[in-house]
Image (cartoon, rainbow, N blue to C red; front, side, top):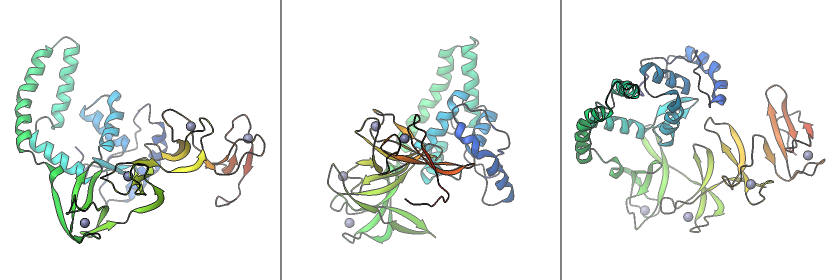
Length: 334
Ligand SMILES: [Zn+2]
Ligand SMILES: [Zn+2]
Ligand SMILES: [Zn+2]
Ligand SMILES: [Zn+2]
């Protein structure tokens, strides 16, 4: 169901989806731009995917949001410019599931099951019989799949690259966060790296190592980019799985134990929240400025505020204070 290549999703009608208000701001412009391009093929946006689910009778309004987050959390899709693109993992999982569970993976099956559930709810169908009808053939498919399905997590691809530490070949394998490059000499050599494929050639991507040391194993922490923005991860991943948020170096004014760190919402909007979350819920949209206390109320820092209409300003985050300073140039430094 991810192949939208032959069909242009239409964004012009907005779908009502309560909790996703930030998304609505993105709709109009994207749709207009899309009409000028015939290549590359259009991909689903959140709203066009929900529209498709509605049309095909899959899911309910109450489950659309969790469908959208599940396919991203499991890294089956990646969002680029508000469109979903299948990842390599997404393509493989879809192929494997369709091969082994062709009936269950059929769109009509899912829609039909939802119909049957409605009938059970209305007392028109017997739930025991309905379950039996479903489960008997499904159980067989499960057993066959357990035996015959490819185990991609154990599959490795040998590249023509050599390990920079021990000269053994570099292989690509599957980890929790998708595919990564590793030394074939594991566990004697624990070299791993992220990689990218350029014109069919695998290239290792150097980790951006910081001066910060891993609190668990002492190795250097490296900058990684995840769904919610940049974060620090131990450079000896996957041996050590320590991760840390990148902080602004500003102490949380609320709990005074955490620091403020840059985060991203599911929709890509940047905000700043306390590293002690969920114990401390302090969060703000404006970018805090280190070392500039409010001249009026002595709040520990001021913050950059930006609106399209009024441009940039520097404000005191303390709502009762109201201190504001106009910034003429967005690139102004203090
Ligand atoms: Zn090695
Ligand atoms: Zn570590
Ligand atoms: Zn806090
Ligand atoms: Zn103030």
